[in-house]
Amino acid sequence: MSVKSYDFHVDTKGYCDIVDVSTQVQELVRKSALTNGIVTVFIPGSTASVTTVEFESGLLSDLQNAFDRLVPAELEYAHDARWGDGNGFSHVRAALIKASLSIPFSDGSLNLGHWQQIVVIDFDNRPRKRRVLVQVMGE
Amino acid sequence: MSVKSYDFHVDTKGYCDIVDVSTQVQELVRKSALTNGIVTVFIPGSTASVTTVEFESGLLSDLQNAFDRLVPAELEYAHDARWGDGNGFSHVRAALIKASLSIPFSDGSLNLGHWQQIVVIDFDNRPRKRRVLVQVMGE
Amino acid sequence: MSVKSYDFHVDTKGYCDIVDVSTQVQELVRKSALTNGIVTVFIPGSTASVTTVEFESGLLSDLQNAFDRLVPAELEYAHDARWGDGNGFSHVRAALIKASLSIPFSDGSLNLGHWQQIVVIDFDNRPRKRRVLVQVMGE
Image (cartoon, rainbow over all chains, first blue to last red; front, side, top):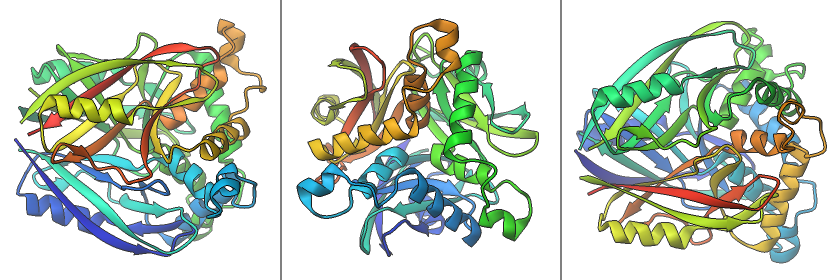
């Protein structure tokens, strides 16, 4: 058993930009040379999240519409009144979807479904360079 | 320290069917013969999720109503316009609740509360046979 | 590689009280003497959750307002009709945000962002003494 820690960066457009990071995560699992275990994908920061989706453009827009309905950017946020960076809605969305996801892998391969990709969703209100942590634990 | 990988299948009715899988997960933790660690429950696929609830019929219907309000099936989804399978709402719900959950165990027992069960929620719009992955890691 | 299991208690006010537990979690990671791995923070019970936020008062009130909009306390809940404890909304909120969060650590330090704290959100409708489980796994 052992643990390997990696990171990589993704450039996002912000505003609910959804970025497929499955390839990067799978490559780091391979690089770890571990065969069975879990990989934890984690975003340091409080305006982005990690989840899995079927990565196709229709669904990406459906998901963005859902966030616009559930946590609208146009409401008044006390965070904005206090700090003036206008991204209160981004913080709320990220708190709901959370910054962490753990995925099992076997024989060196992520146990994802065929139509299931790991995505980083950047809820912030500007483009960001996001650091993504990938910790591989197993044997 | 070691890792053990298992799976099992559950038959669901789809349409926000909520299935208690606590017994299966607990039995696999026992089977692993590991005493302390975490078990990760993961659904390969993008229209189902894992969480914990108090498994009683009133709450199950409350939760189903909440999903109907938050991500209605009746809206138009770009995923459906593109792929015609009519389950855009299922994908959006699953992306929000996510496919993974990690639960600590001690002395071979899951550290759940007395009124807390592990559930798979199948958001798809048809009955499904769902494969549930259970990865036990610990010592 | 090894696993260390800890717990601590927090007194909450209920009603979406958001409590910063980052210091306690970080101290337990130090106490474990493990340097690299993941820490899983888990709440036994079905009316509280764990996530990360920028812990500042504006955002805490934004998040509480979001829960009031998304899962209002004033709706009728079948759980309440059945059990009479009036916290159906608390259960639904906790099922959505979930009771578990895994965070990687390196060199003995949590890999959180500068403005990212680990919080327990108590959705129940009364003050609670909450037991928080902290399981540290790594090497």
